[in-house]
Every structure is written in structure tokens, then in C-alpha cells.
Length: 503
Image (tube, rainbow, N blue to C red; front, top):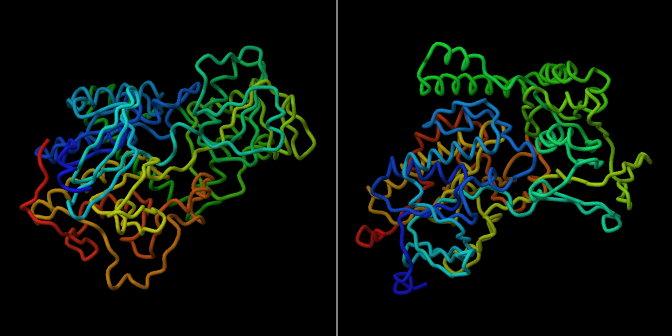
């Protein structure tokens, strides 16, 4: 697009994609660290929240504690495992207290993002989903905070006989608001955090609910409380101090647990299974809650007050560990020969990975194939100028990395101004040219289904720390703030004379 055409578009220094936990945090950090930068947040949905807005199934809650999933700059004062409503209220307070609402435009779906090296600008084509109006924006910098999976559509495998089934098939991501579970037999397919959340929250409403899993998952049952937080509140300690103290404790404990999972997996496995066994007994634990893999090869969800296991122990719910042969008119035929009758089948079977938010990306006239790029620390990508992507942690809270990436973006923007540069991209250095290129993440260390299905959509990683997303908060919290922005991996260009226009 020519400069004259771009002039007709509304311009911002920075355009943030998404008003979820990352986008709202990014907006806050921009106002504090780069107050001279104009910016806008474009959000497809009708409000903020992302996951916490779209997921409306019963009991929807965090599986990370809110002292670390919450922002570092705003104290969390509720229970560590929070409901979607509580998280949305918290985010709403961040927006209101910091006057971020004036920067956010809802119902703005981004269709296309094109970078022009002639203009050193991104041109964004968007659609107002409520009016159908076509809009265009230009931005000097693009900050991708849209998450990593398709919000509008969950992943449901294709099983034989699904068309024959006479009942209702539901994915938790599109839970009907008028669903009546009374006196219904329900089967939940899945074994992750979503299934574990749903089961105890519908068990009292159903005739019976059965959790059908192909293989078990690790869980951590425990009180939905943190003793030190309660003690400090009893002593009338300021909430800002409590947030920081508890946050540090949780981070320390998380680091210790993760290292132990790798260094002494059998001991950690025994501890996790003992926690479950105390609620459902050793026989049920051995049969249905003993995974075949070592801890932390997939995410481990916290089960507040052990509600999943209490529902099973009380007889309100059952667990079946088996594989599906086919669907039938009345339910599911298992490979063991057993049949599970169901009026409603819930497929808690995961996400559809969606690395770039279904946006058509073009770089200097050529379509971007994200899978052909190489990642710089999971934030920037070879051949993609003036763009940073937020992808959080698997073994720690997502927001921890969102905060770190925000600091990096703001520091990079300042550095570009100091250099008089309007363009920055990362490129392999001479010493990196023969570096082996590997999949985004090592499947031996972490291999959930949604990543394995979509690995081809993600950038490559190298065998050097700079060219990997380490997934290690305890290393990155020290490394990211001191990244040498003049390292040869960063290539700057553009002139100060053509600096971006203010909105």
C-alpha cells in the first residue's frame, strides 16, 4: 500500500491485538512506560477478557493461582483459584482504574495485516462485527496479544457414528446458556482441567455424570486458600505487600516443584497420587488417576478442595478409562465392549491451535507462513518486522510472561526512538547460520494434544537460548530484562525524519 493510501487510515504508534489478559496488561504497561506513544487495542469480542469471556461452561475457573496469574501491578485479594466472573471483575478494575477503556475498541475483527518496508508501517484491515463496516488502521508496531487458540471453536475429534447419535453433543467452548441437565445422563469426554472443572459443577444437576478418558492426567487437590495470605491479612498487612510476598512464595514453590518433577519424577508422582488417593482410595487412583507419563509433560491443574474427587467418592460421578470404538444412537460403544448411555455428550477434548488469530498476514507483498520463521525467545520472528507476540508459560502462569514481554516491548520502542529507527526485525547471525532448526517446543518435555496437532503452524526454534521459548520463568525473569538490544540478532533500519504520525 502506498503512503498516500496509508494516510487515509487511522494511525497509531502501537496496535495491540486482543483485550484478554495479555492485551489489557500490555495497554497498562504502555501507559506507564511509554506515555508518549499513541495506541489502540482491537478486540473481536463485545468486551474484554478473552478466555474468561468466551468460556461460559459451569464452574469455569483458573487452574493457576491468581497471585501469579494476576498482574504484578495490581494485588489479588480473593481466593487463589478464581472463577471467570472474579477474573473479569479484576480485569475490569484494571481497565477502569487506569482509564484504559478509551483505548479499546470492541467488535473489531482484524482480517488482514500487511507490512510495507517502503513505509515502515503495518496496515490493518478490520471489520466492525456489529455493523459490517470496513475499517483500516496503520501502526508502527504490532503487539499480538490474541492468545493461541480459536475462541469460537473448540476441538472435537471425528468419531465413527457421530451422525447416528440421537442426543446432544456439546463442546465446553460453546456451552448453551439454556442447557437443561435435569435428570439427564451426561458423559464428559476428556481428562484435562476443563473436564475436571465441569464434572463437580454439574454433578448435582444430572441424573449421573461419567468422565470418559482415554488416559489419566495428573492433578493437585488442595484447599483453595494460601495460609500465609490469610495470616498476613489477619495482621492487617497492606494488600500490596501481601500480593508481593505470596507471589514470591508461589513462584518459589512452583520452581521447586518443577525442578523436582524433572530430577526426581517418581517421588513427585508418588506425592501427587497420594493426594488423590486420600480422597478416592488407592484402587480408584490406580485404575483411573495414574498417568503413564512423568509429571509435567502436560499441564497439571489444581483441583480446589478436591471437588472432582469428592464427586467421584460420593457416587455422584463415575470415571471410565477406555477408548471410543464408535458413537451409537444412545451413547458410546467403548473398545472394551462396554456401552455408555448418554442424553448429552460433552467433548472436553481441547483447543484448535490458532497462532496468528486467523489474520491474513502479508510481508512486503508475500503471504507470511509463520511455520517458516525462527523464533527469537518466543517473542519475535525472523522476517517479521516490528511485531512482538505474547505466548505465556505452560508450567507457570501465563501473565508472568505477559508482564515480562510488556517490559521488553516498551524497552524496544524506546531503543528504536534513541536510534532513530522505524524498523526492527530479528535475523539469524553468522554464527547461527548452520544451527539446527527444531519444532517450537521439545515434545519430550511437553506434549499436550493441541500443540502436537498444530506444531506445523508454529515457528521453528534453534539450539541456542536466543532462538528458543525456554518456558522457564525463573530464568527469563533475569534474562529478558537485560537482553542486549544492540546484539547482531536485531537489525534496525528507517530514518528519524519519517517518524510515525500521532493519532
